[in-house]
Each structure stands twice: as structure tokens, then as C-alpha cells.
Amino acid sequence: MPDAIAIAGLRKTYAAQGNAPAKEALKGIDLAIPAGSIFGLLGPNGAGKSTLINILAGLVNKTAGRVTIWGFDQDVNPRQSRAAIGVMPQELNMDPFFTPRASLEVQAGLYGVPKRERWTDELLELVGLTDQANAYARALSGGMRRRLLLAKALVHRPQILVLDEPTAGVDITLREMLWQNVRALNRQGMTIILTTHYLEEAEQMCDEIAIINHGELVVRQDTRSLLSRADGKTLVLDTGGRVALPVLPDGAHPEWRGDGRLAISYPPSRIRADQLLDALRGAGIPILDVATEQPDLEDVFVEMTRG
Ligand SMILES: Nc1ncnc2c1ncn2[C@@H]1O[C@H](COP(=O)(O)OP(=O)(O)OP(=O)(O)O)[C@@H](O)[C@H]1O
Image: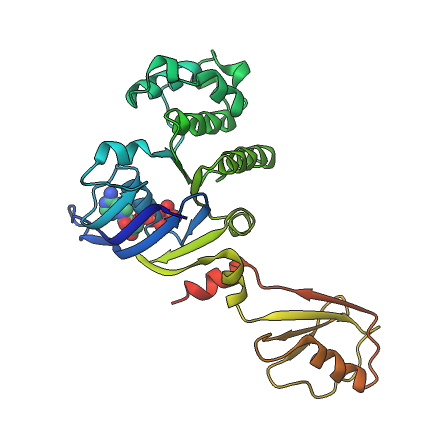
């Protein structure tokens, strides 16, 4: 797969303003995002995610480094590199006097999309705004505005779609609709980059994940192997009530839960589940039911961004 985006040595320092000192928001990021992926960009508040996205979108000037979008160097071919990317921003401000249809037409005009190549009606249909096509934007609900922002990001048929916190404060129905849209676009070949604070969502949606912290890339991995980095699993057993426990393999930590079940956390890199089960059975402890609990992205995230 060629890279949709290649970033090398990317730095951003915001100049000092008044009493605020200069701020180094990105400290030399190297990152390649493969074409066709759904890529998650995660990090705690202030990590530099918006700065990175705004640089990609051409809204913030970088201090140093190279950004190549769909094969076009941002400094050499600014127009082509901008045309390859569409950004759905976080904030919901929009012109209150434009209807959704007019908004999309204006946006298409800004990108120089000729009239016959516009797909306004299809876009309105795609995001479920056909019925509101001619309503004033100020009459749209927050959810409808968000959908309009998604449509606006797509007017010029970009190869890469960037979503900045697309589901922050959005209800379940809208969230599902957004994700259906995003998956459908991805199936058609569009590369998707998203930031989100909902780690569960990133875990479900993203093929690959990068975590940045304090302006540095701390990890970039496919989601599955990232999850397996957290070396901790839990075996949860119903032993029919509290019983005396035998000695367990070194590294296993048993604990009785409030519901009377026995939870044994262990590092799967060193201990296998059957060693634990053998030890219990060897001590004559009945095992009425077994479940396992895997670490999730939240665990990995906390581990990677600690300190
Ligand atoms: N225009 C600016 N001028 C000065 N400092 C800025 C500016 N924009 C961002 N910063 C600082 O740069 C750092 C990175 O901010 P950024 O908004 O990129 O983080 P983020 O990861 O997007 O955070 P969040 O999840 O809260 O949106 C922060 O310390 C922020 O205060």
C-alpha cells in the first residue's frame, strides 16, 4: 500500500504571545499513514493532535519538517496536496443564513469544483439531509450541523478524510450513522484519519493507531498488536463460593470479587491459563464457570501516556 500521508521530522512551535511563552506543540513527528486505512490519532488533551490535523489541512503553518499528502509535497504542490484532503472540523460554527444545499455549493466553489462535477444531491442524501436541503442552517439541530460538516468535507471528493472528534457530544443514533457513512466511504477506497476521545470507538473502528503525547509519537501500531502490548489478562472463575487457594504460578494475582467470583490477573507472556486452572483443579477446587477479560485500548493508552 502506498502512503496516503507521509510526515517526516514535523515540528510546530507556537510563538510566545503576551505573557504566554512559546509552545513546542510538535517535537519532530515521523508518521506514515497507509492508503485505504482507518487510522486513529489518539492522545491526551493538549498532546498536539489538532495541531497535526490543522497542519495537514493547510490551516496551520509548520515550523519544520516535510508533509506529503497523496504523493504531493505540501510545500512544493500546495494546491494538489490540499485537494487530496477533506477535513470535518470539531467546531460547529457555520453561516446561519446558508441552507445546506447552498453551503455545499459554496464550498464546492471554494475548491474550484466545476458545476457538472458537483454531487450536492448525492451528498445531502448520503448524510441524511435531503429533507433539510433548503432549510436555514440556524434551524438545524446540532446533529444535522455535524452531518452537514461531513458533507462539506467531501464536496471535492478527497482521497483522504480527516475527522476531528466527530462524535464528541453526539447521541448514539447519530454516532452510528456517522460510522456507517465513514465505513462506506472507506470501503470505496477513502483513507480515514480520526481523532477521538472514545477509546472504545477507536478500538472498534481503526485498523491502525498512533498515540501522541507532549508533541511526540509514543506508539504507532495496528490495533490488534497494540492491544496485545498490555501484558495482562484476567481469568474470572465461579468456584461456587470462597475457598482456600493453593499457591499459584509466580506473577498471578488472585482476588475475590464482590459477586463471589475469583478473578486471577496474570501476564499471558509468562503464564498460560491452563497452568492456573491445573493449579486450582489440583487443589480440588470446583470450576463451575470460566470467563476471560482482555485489556482494552484504555489500558494501553493509560500505560503509554503515563508520566
Ligand atoms: N494557536 C496556538 N497558540 C499557542 N499555543 C497553542 C495554539 N494552539 C495550540 N496550542 C498549544 O499547543 C499544544 C497542543 O495543542 P493541540 O490543540 O494541538 O492539542 P490536542 O491534542 O488537539 O488537544 P485536545 O485533545 O484538547 O484538542 C497545547 O499545549 C496547546 O495549548
